[in-house]
Length: 127
Image (cartoon, rainbow, N blue to C red; front, top):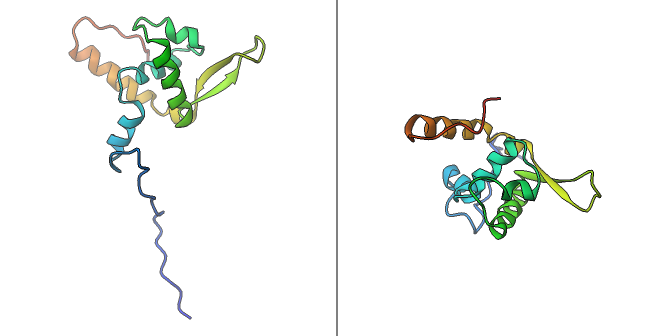
C-alpha cells in the first residue's frame, strides 16, 4: 500500500461567510477597520481598561458603539475581560498577545499622522 503524499503547508479553511475575501488586509479591516475600534485598542495600549475610561476619551465614543466594539474585540481574541479588584462583578479589559501584536501597526499609523496631518500630536508613545 502506498502512502499518500502529504503537504507540509497547513490546509486553510475557506473564509467564514462574514468575510468578504481571504485577503489578510480585508480580513483585518473587517475586525478593526471602522472609525472606533483602533481608538479602543489605542486606549488599551495607553493603560485604559474600564468602560468608563473608554467613554471619557476625547473622541467621545457613544456607549452603544463602545459595547459593540468591545464585544467584537472579545470574540476575535484581541481583548480579554478581567475582573476588577472592586467586587468581581465589574470587568476591565486588556489586550491579549494577539492585540499586543497590533502595537507596531498603531505606532506606524501614529507616525504617519504626525508626518502628514498638520496639527496632530502623539498620544501613543513608543514602548
